[in-house]
Amino acid sequence: MNATASHNAAPPPAGPTYWLEQALAAESPGGCPPVTGTVRADVCIVGGGYTGLWTALELKRASPDLEIVVTEAQSCGLGASGRNGGWMTSWYDELDRLVERFGLEQGLWLADESSAAIDRIETFVGEHEIDCQLRRRGSLWISTTPGQDEVIEGPLNACRELDRGAFVERLGSSEVERRTGSRISRGGVLIRDSAAVQPALLARGLRRVALRQGIRIFEGSPMLQLVRSAPAAVLTPAGRIEADQVVLATNAWAARIRELRNAIFVVGTQIVLTEPIPERLAHLDWREGLLLGDARLFVHYAQVTPDGRIAFGRGGGAIGPFGRVVPKHFIDPRTAATVAADFREWFPELRDVRLTHAWGGPVDRAPGHLPFVGSLGEHGNVHYGIGYSGNGVGPSALVGRILASRTLGLDDAYGRCALVSGPPGHLPPEPLCSAGAAIVRSVVQRTEEREQHGIAPGPVGRLSKRLVGFSIPPLRRRRLP
Ligand SMILES: Cc1cc2nc3c(=O)[nH]c(=O)nc-3n(C[C@H](O)[C@H](O)[C@H](O)COP(=O)(O)OP(=O)(O)OC[C@H]3O[C@@H](n4cnc5c(N)ncnc54)[C@H](O)[C@@H]3O)c2cc1C
Image (cartoon, rainbow, N blue to C red; front, side, top):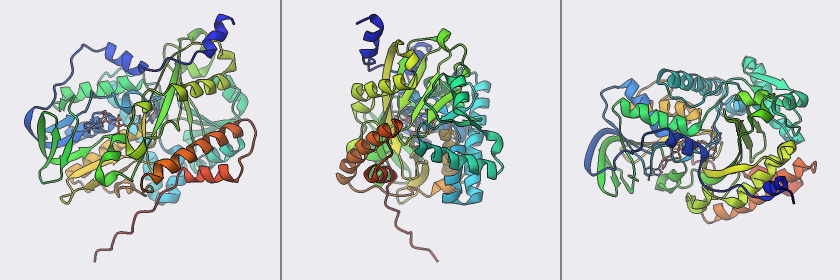
């Protein structure tokens, strides 16, 4: 066996997250202290990822005198925000479904606002000198099977019909190959407003700006208990935060909150990273920050880093039973090995390239695959924004704005938008949910692999794919007179 072949056989080393290693190495050491004693604030935000930090920054912008604290279990950005694939995308790739679900006006508003959120992030990181390697070259959303052709066709047509055609461009398979070097596609759509980003540098940059603006951040301070009183109280191991309003921005971890237990499903996603190969990618557009992904249910997503590494991920990883985030969400060598195999299939000519990192994280999958915002507690002073379903890098800036409007009680387009009605559906109770999901996941995985090799899905495969989005509609609220 030659050296090249042994690289192939070796599974990627599971463990450290490249993005976080890079971001933390660029900082001077020292975290924010934990909460001790009793802390008083106007607003307490639980969770220091993008959602929590954008909400804090939006609140500060709207109301500079507010006393805002963020309490984070570990350190800001160590959750999904510092580990993701760095795909910053809008919802133009969902436009048909948005219009179907929310009507023309709201559907278009949400899609346009998700795109405007990327504009805002780009401006914000420029103004605040957050060097997060943001490159706005668009995303290439490709089809690799006949079934995926239909998936990309709907939003493409909706964009054209609804005067959003400037955001999308159809590309043939040879054009995709010219830009990315991959021969796997049947063609695809270039979505122009997307940006690639180094996610952990963005999260840590937001933390830095928040601190500079006087937002108090406590780290190593998990919320152990939420007292749903007015004011509300957040209890941590060594202290207590009392606040008029609380915002829960805990992503997949929110599945452990009593009222949100059946609102989201926790599932892992894994990424593998190559060694730097800039010279082998030099002739491809992809090298400049174009994103690449497919239209599978268990989606593949990839980007090239500025130093010429390929980060290649896939959804549909380990299930979090009973709404738990488990160690396997972060380190899952078995799933990572299958993601590595997919990478070799997409780029056979890079089979000699070494994989240096593999990591993952938890995703808060929601019925309808869009985030939702709501309030809980009899005083309505505890708000939450969750359910990104693996697409939160750009949308979290929009959700942060919605949460800020809601927290401030503003009657504006954000506070009134279609995402503020809480969970759009509920999952079946446990243990049915986890057991059913495990079966559905393995059938869908097999079905999508077979489709990749030209085998059309049978009835069980087709049914399982539909079941991925299964939820129980919320009970109709009694109409108030
Ligand atoms: C591997 C991976 C790849 C992804 N790829 C993409 C992508 O390419 N594009 C995209 O758009 N989206 C992607 N996503 C999804 C995206 O990362 C998330 O939607 C987004 O980061 C959500 O931000 P957040 O702040 O809500 O969550 P998080 O960043 O997870 O923040 C939640 C925070 O809450 C903290 N917390 C939890 N419990 C408590 C508690 N009790 N008390 C205090 N703090 C608590 C956690 O420590 C964490 O820091 C990916 C996700 C993963 C895991």
